[in-house]
Image 1 (cartoon, one colour):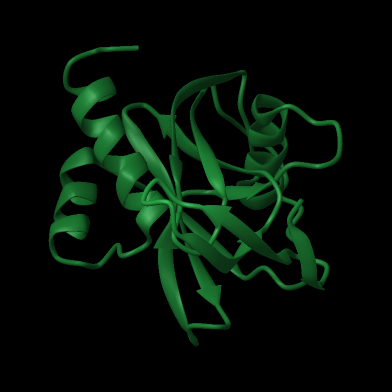
Image 2 (cartoon, rainbow, N blue to C red):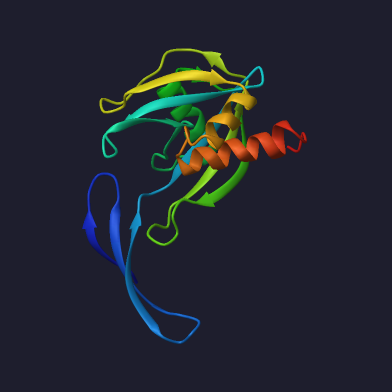
Length: 173
């Protein structure tokens, strides 16, 4: 059983001891932030991005909307709730696309990514510490932003590339 060595309101840090395939034993640490979700909101073929101020980085970055699941909540329901809270858009559809580990060397966080469609503008409900601006971007603009390192958030790059290569381009759903 892994041992909690630190806990705060956003995550826990756990110590583990594992026997590796090489038969050596490793003692290490990982962060468990709980369950999260990422959304690719699409309106008329354009993707809604957030420009969010990230205090630890001391700068604004471009991101797909994302957030945490509440206790007992499914990923699809959390995606709809978080999208509305952060962007003010209500989605009629949340379709699972893929899931990836954010940084498997230091965290067990695995983020499911949902395609959000049928969006209708409502009111946003930002948390006190969220400073977010939203804007729609064409696929061409997004790919240029990724290529030029204007978008440098991993989950956002993954979501954009998956959407442009497998959903938008080929129609795979």
